[in-house]
Length: 465
Image (tube, rainbow, N blue to C red; front, side, top):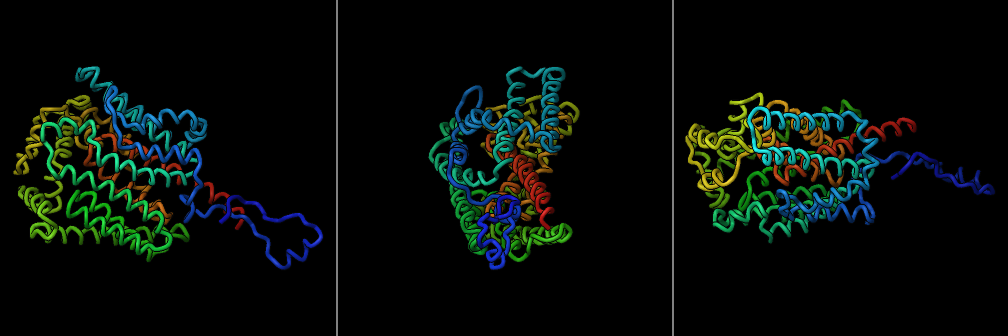
């Protein structure tokens, strides 16, 4: 593999002619984007720091709000990489992110201070959420822009991070654990990240050697999580495993039109497999074949007026996300203000669905303010339409990362696919919590880094054809 476009010719004149006849001139071509963009890298100071950013990503503390130690580490390290950002933001995508972020902050100020009269503390928290999305975006943009291989050390760092998360109760869950609002499923959910981090570290090592083995690891892990933990995590892992299996039968190199056709074919096959997985789920879960936990969960969520249809399970399982959409529809222009979605909206959604509202939601509904259980709909419901463009830009980056991961077919592609799938789900059905803001910021930075190296390598490669 080659690093730069230069000729590997030495100047030993006595036997130069004979040596040229015996062996051809080696032209050092540009880096092969389809295998080594995220390839191995020697351990040094930068990789060690990136490892600790991953390792501390689950350790949260209370300052002016909940802050992850890795975010503080990013804040300290960012000035060391700041010189790279000068060139970075001449590109259109980073500029669009910054402009839409400024627009979102303006929307928060207008909605909170001029329209709804929200308390200054809550308004500051709303602005801080945008700031903490921009922090990982800037950090990873600067780090990955020059050397995407550093991402491997972040993936390795997720193993100690998941161990910390397994044995430590976060600041957010502390009160719920103390008063007994959580059950055994809370601890089962904490096992999932540990299994995922170990599995993806193994897949990163084995992917180039055996895609079949990598696929098998993810399938086994997906089945385990489906039986004992989160269906969402299980589904995302099984989708990644399906994509890896499909990618092993399709080459993702060639002309741009050929690549586009293959990507479309992969997407269609993947969607068909997702539908097949849903059919298996609605047959297996009510019969107890997936364990008692999934059987109880299925029966609870299938009792809405929509039954066991995909939208019935989705609406009941993520009713709080659709409550944010309902609130946004009620005040679409300026929203209700930061952390001010009415508490009556969620019970209305459950009443409409004809489903029973879980007891823990009753408790939390009156313990904490509501900012919406969806990044996109929550921003719309709290701050109005001007807060939406930022997350639409991020959504486009999520889609782009999905296809970039398939096209690159790198050892990190399985992790990139998981990142894209999880980010798409988070934008629609999860709040902008600590994990979401770090993940979404990284997604945008990865798209910028991959685009940069694709453009550069195409430009260099064209000179040597």
